[in-house]
Length: 130
Image 1: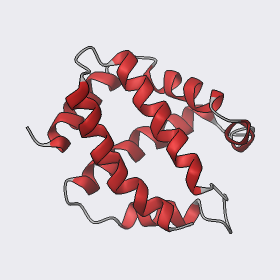
Image 2 (image 1 turned 90 degrees about the vertical axis):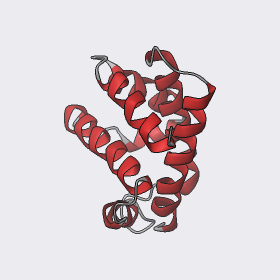
Image 3 (image 1 turned 135 degrees about the horizontal axis):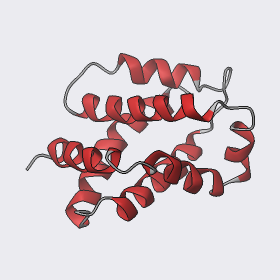
Image 4 (image 1 turned 60 degrees about the horizontal axis):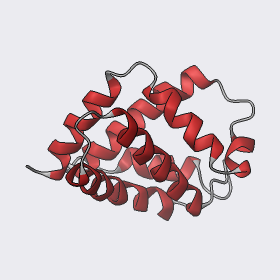
C-alpha cells in the first residue's frame, strides 16, 4: 500500500473521532509556551477547520498535487508575517502523530512511517517559506 493511501485511511479514521482536532490542539499547545502565545487570540473552531484542510493539503501534495497552497501557507507563516519559526513545525508534527497514535484504532509502525513520509514532504515546503 502506498504511504499516501495508508495516511488517507488513517486520517479518515481520525476525523471520525469527534475530539480528534481538540486532542491535537491539547498536545500542540502543551508542547511550548511559544505556541500557546501564538494562539492567544485565535478563533479555535475556525482554526480546527483550517487544520482539517491543511492536513488534507499535505496529503494531496504528497500525492502529486501542485504545492501552491503549501507555499502560500509558508509565506503567511514567514518571518515577516506570522513569524512561525521552522522548529515549531516539528512540535506540530509530534503533536499530530501523538494524536493519531492515540485515536486511530489501526495505528501501527507502518502507519507512523507513512504519516512521517507524507508530512515531511509538505512541511519542508512550508519551512522553506520562512
